[in-house]
Image (cartoon, rainbow, N blue to C red):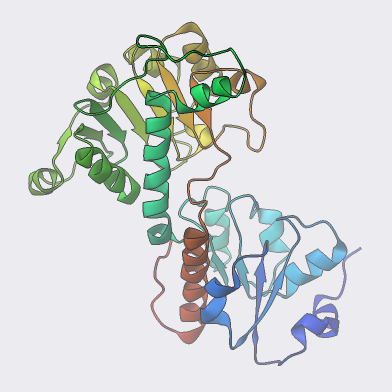
Length: 336
């Protein structure tokens, strides 16, 4: 049974502050400090845990003029159709594969994202995973806590040095470049593959070298994935690509899980096609394959590339500023 959205909106205490105030719905609670741009002129409410679980949640959605979703909330056609007042979807984060952008555009709804706020924390996390895999930090930590399972000795527990190694970056966007800067500071050589090659002048400035994907996979000691998720990049890394990599190669994914054929990656890690992997994202989130949980040569984190309080505040602020600017008639910071 469909409810009378206008009547129900007017009955919600959340929406009774002023008829002139815009209705903003967040799909989960976010840092209050980041909501400063919408502190005045907006009624703000939240769903619980990124889910629409009650009729009241559907009413809130139907009333909202601005939606600020996180990546775990799927903005589908059904969601969009149940939000007749919706004018802008201000995504919390850079990736927007959880939003039906084409349908939103068809309905005249703006979609923005927050690319700048995620760059440095994701690059930090990428490099942390790279170091953890290379030096077997997670494995050694677990074994040190289990008495007698590891011994301190000269030629045991050996990992790999990153200095002097070749880092191959697939996707030299904002995050890829931030990772490259860190790699250069560690004495690594950086090669990259992009859909479009950057200028020679910029390559020289960034100290990076362009390779074909095949040559990059064949020659890189570390491969780090930084491309957006789309139909064209689905399973960009599969069995054929994993078999091209060196047996000592380290594979890092802090982008999106669907970029990788997870079953092929599990075989690569289990059968020794590659040295190890650092994974922050998974193909069927929130599920993580049990095989990955049992492997010592993989370091796992829970889609936590931007998982710092500073980053969460910055991402919230960026999305909220996009909303404020849209309703103020100003140029938004980043439109999809």
